Image 1 (cartoon, rainbow, N blue to C red):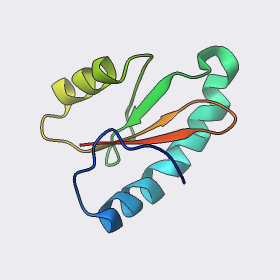
Image 2: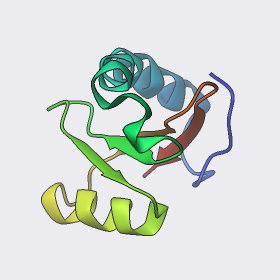
Image 3: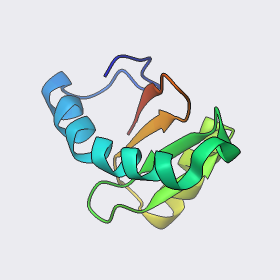
Length: 88
C-alpha cells in the first residue's frame, strides 16, 4: 500500500507487517461501510480487529488511545484509492 504516514516513527518492516495484518480487516469494512463514509478515516487495532471511524485523524486516534493506551493502530482513508496512515 502507498500513502502518507501520520507518524514517521517505527521500523518500516514493522509498519509493513501491521499493514498486512490490518488490510484484510479494512477490506471487509470497506464492503460493510460502503459509500456512506467516503473519505472517512478507519483506524484499526490489529489484535482485536476493533476499528474507530471518523473524519478527523486526531479525534480518531484519541478515541483509539483511550480504549487501547499504548496501542499501535493502522488507519486507512475510505475511498476508491485508500490512503494509508500509520498511527502509533
